[in-house]
Amino acid sequence: MKQERFERSHGPLWDDLERWLQGEPTLADEDVPAGFRRLCHHAALAGDRSYGAPLNDRLQALALALHQRLYQHREGGLGLWRIVARDYPARVRAEWRLVLFSCLLLFGTWAAAFLVVRRNPDLVYLVLSPAQAAEMVRMYDPASREFAGMAGAMRNVAMFGHYISNNIGIDFQNFGSGLLLGAGPIASMIFNGVYGGAIMAHLTNQGLVATFYGFVSGHSALELVGAALSGAAGLRLGLGLMHPGRRPRLEALKDAGRRGAYLLMGAATLTFMAACIEAFWSANRWVPWKTKVGVGSALWLLLLAYFLLAGRRRVSR
Image 1 (cartoon, rainbow, N blue to C red):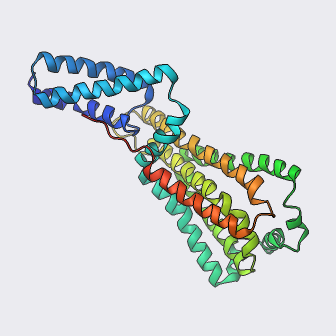
Image 2 (tube, one colour):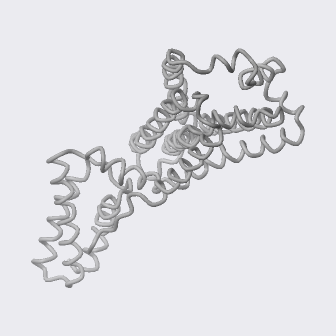
Image 3 (spheres, one colour):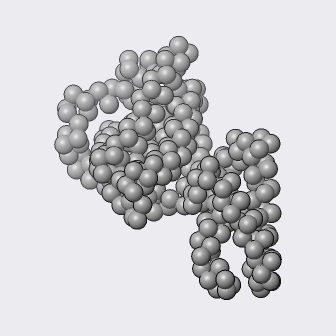
């Protein structure tokens, strides 16, 4: 077999293995050992047939990198640190189109609803009933009983459980509803964006800046980014169902389910962390609200840097 035909036949596998090493979801983890064995066979053939030095160098370097990675897997598994520090942010970047679309749905509608209600306060009643709007004001009014009851050790523990059950449940709903041809996560992102933006504008119009922003700022980055990632996970599931490509639809759906579930686990982890902050930090009235806003802003920057920069690693050839 000529070298050009050899590269044309097996090149897609080599490319997939290289991108997998970089953290992209080109192959399922359980498929990599078989791909590694095929690569070793290809490297041996390339050497026996005296193909060009660049091809032999590439295959040998790739085989060595895969051997080192798979050896680490056998010794200690994937490793929690490697997943957090490298694999997960790389996987999110690999799904950047869906993540960006989900973020635009959530944060775009949030910003639009905020600006509209901020300018026309009565429009909040298109989203909230008068009773619900009044209840929101009482919750964040420093003079109300509701606000006075927002702190306390037992209440914090109880609310921690509530936040986990409710918010992580929403993440899983966003993922599962992707089976509705992607309509579920789209509707969820839009609804939550409009709802959250309208409430934020309403409480700002009522002058409850210190109490409201002091409460939500600390956990907002983790909770909202987690929600957007769960929406992207659901969209991946919907796309696998609608556009299987040349694969059987069930096989495409299984692959989309694995990729979406990986995003979902990270989203649920972020939501869990947000629940910890919301229950034990956000409700703490002894911390000045501006300090909470400062900490919350720092978390937004750290989370953005994490997803943009962490896990960037190239394979040497």
